[in-house]
Image 1 (cartoon, rainbow, N blue to C red):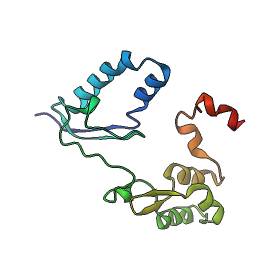
Image 2 (cartoon, helix red, strand yellow):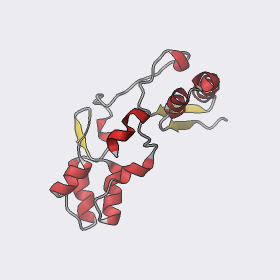
Image 3 (cartoon, rainbow, N blue to C red):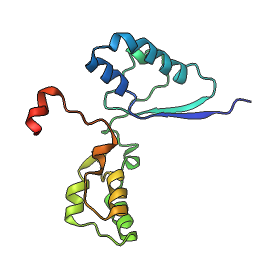
Amino acid sequence: MIKKSCFFIDEYDTPFIEAHVGGFYREIKNGLASMLHNALKTSRSLQYAMLTGIQRVAKENIFSDLNNLVVCTVKNKQYDQYFGFTEEETKTLLEYYGLSLSEEVKAMYDGYHIGNQSIYNPWSIINYADNDSLQTYWVNTSENVKPKTLQNQFR
């Protein structure tokens, strides 16, 4: 009996973007596409898969042979409650840690809108509750290299 599994790939598109920016996209495209094909199309143990990224998943190109593909964006309403903390959830979490949802906290960590939900950044809220310090916690969670054309504007 084959055990069914779920496969999650966060920022699936990062290798493709980096390869494009670095000038070696053609060299790795087929290998990456083959890896995704084997994991998502031909695996006998796959039940569900979820990919996240900043580029829209196109049903063409590297995903052309996938079926039953559902593409969701931040405008989709059916999953909006799963992508952050609502204001009520944030308030409850902070009160548990003896903190309040002040205007400063709102200004620092609110501002995301997915579907019909206004949400707070979960990583930042959890770290704020843990450290009791308003900081940009998300800065060190991924690559934040500015394109060369913009680097001088941010000095």
